Length: 611
Image (tube, rainbow, N blue to C red; front, top):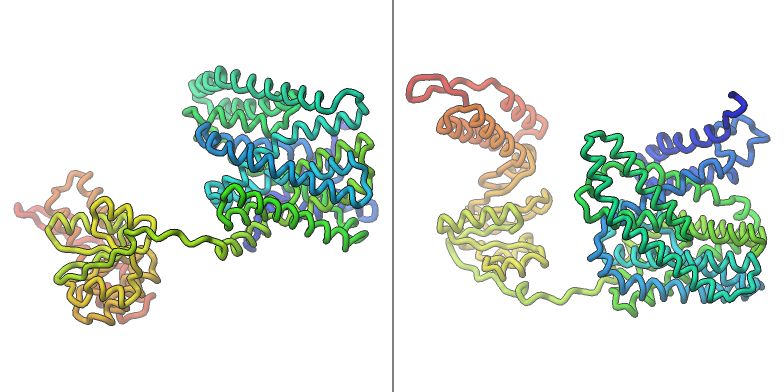
């Protein structure tokens, strides 16, 4: 039994788990991307890194991956789970809306980039068939890393995010003919290449249609049956079965496993089980995708860098530059704004994980030499490792290329001034409630906000809201602050609140200023700089919670409301009195008051009532 124990597989798995549990948390602590952590760990601990020194230093056996094949299968599931989750977040309507980008921009990008890169490869003496293979494999980008980076940044819904996803989806579809092309060349088939490609595409289409039909008929009943048992472990098992099963079915049909899982996710997106499935596989996806990044890092051969550093650096820069320029130009022809076109180009400029599959297959069939394969995969790995850095560069660079939006006519309407009115600064959720109550009590008011998207819609709905910067004294004067009765500040940002209060108080020493505050310390600070009344969110929430709890405990409503008002007045007096004290002393005083036992009050019958 002991002879059957594969110690290599378990030791390699322990290295991956150790990376996920120890190395990546350390990387996160220093503010770096976990993707970079996995990539760096793979390069360092893989067979081409410290793993190559095991014979000289045997203790490294337990700290490095001995054989990449031991973890490759598990790591590939990371991309499968990622594409399943993407499909789960989409709908057919959203996918149909992307069809112009998928079949138009995505197809053009693949064809044009393949042609350019193949031409460059041919200039370096590669045969035409090898050049086409290299061009096609390098034309594809990294679905796993790009989608993960955009997802972590919450940017999948932006123009650049949607465009990147559409192009990546087109590239995934292009994998089928590329694999068929490599297989035909490797077998030396005499049959027509176009005929073989056409047959492969027909088979792929039939497979996709079959998956959609069976999915629509079987997936919803399957999950209803499992959910009816109430056993969470069976729900997990069913979810894993569907993801891996559809992936295997797609692979058997000549498609990628990731594409099969994507179709399954798309089918389940319309069901009532979407959120439960998403929650179930979230931890699996994160861990397996990390393993995938680790295996990508293992393909970074430091020896290639040492062997031909100049050509390697030039190839890395050239690949990213050529693909980024082509993509940006094509995106502009499809009328995408400059900032989205540039960000998409930088994100998709590096190579992708499919290069390892395609070039690896071509190498095993004897179409590409080992030296060319090793060099190309080293270039691909390094460019993929640069994706998080390029994403950061894109975020910093693209704001400079944003075209100014056309000014909505509603934003140019000037405040009407007036006298004896209230000025409500901020017309968000809090400001809307304040304005509605002012209107109910027939108080004249004027609201201002700096949200250029919201103000026009608010004005068209009949509300007197004006666009402008309330920290600008001239704008405040145009709002009639010199003749107004009160200024009510409802914005959330502390710095903005402070600056507005200072500007208003500098213009009018006698005006009433009522301001929202984040907490007791902020309220004390606002009293120091001149507000008439500050309303701390934390204290107000605790008072409302207390009121609801006391009424729920069947206490008399009148005494409860009276005690809440009394407690609110106590807090206000303490904050006003403590405005000249230190923040630490103020905080201690407020907390002490909050936990002091309430003194009993008497109702009109002489019975004790709680405050």
